[in-house]
Image (cartoon, rainbow, N blue to C red; front, side):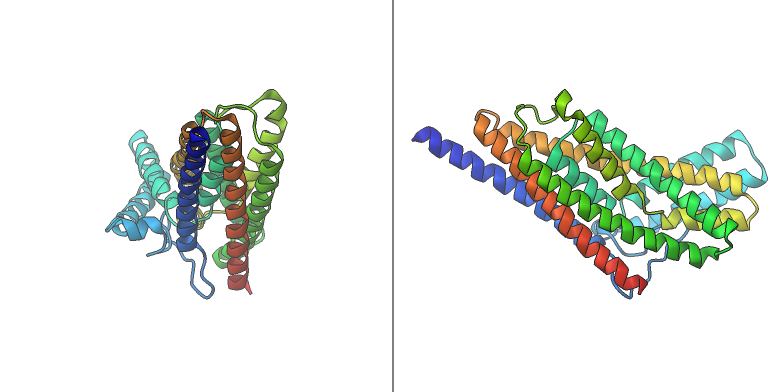
Length: 313
């Protein structure tokens, strides 16, 4: 009787912890959601002013972002006009720092990544790798949008931003699909191993599919800040320096997204370690995390998709 009561108490505690983490993620996502009728402008290297959890939680962070954006613009111009080792280093430093803060601002990528690894688990190495590839994909999407839509097709900055907004709608829809897949997958696979980061060989193909789906959902949307920076570089006749700066920003974004992914994986480990003494309870909590995490991703993705679509209409 005592063991059953202890198991029940552990289950309630684990469920409460998971619920609190999921609720926090929902609140963060709601604060970062696109608002119909609200402009989504961003300065080169910056974020939409006043939006996002970071801007509201840390006083003065917006001013720091603006200063970094200006420093990145100046260092990019200097590198393009007078290339040197010091100018290259300045672009790398300001670009990475700006990328870290831009990635910590508004955006659904962090919510999807954190909940994905909370729901499914992963080694820290795999979590960092997936987050880094997603950041690289976003940089590639940003550069492709500028060079194909802006330069080759002559759409201009507004046309490129509108094209990026359409990709954003697609990205939100993919996030909703990823959430549904995570939820269904978790309900079908309880995970026999007690290790939160275990990846049995038989599960490897299934996990790789999930990783690629996450990369597409989190990284498909071009960065408005990177697009603005690249257009500045084109207008100033320094496209090469602009590309270097955009890649530096992507490295900074990878740092932030990797930290978020590792935090999600760590949270799952902590929760499952608390119920590791009971195999049945461990499997039940693991399944609950997967289903709940997938549900939140699906709902948030659907709401964000509708909101972004409303802006486009």
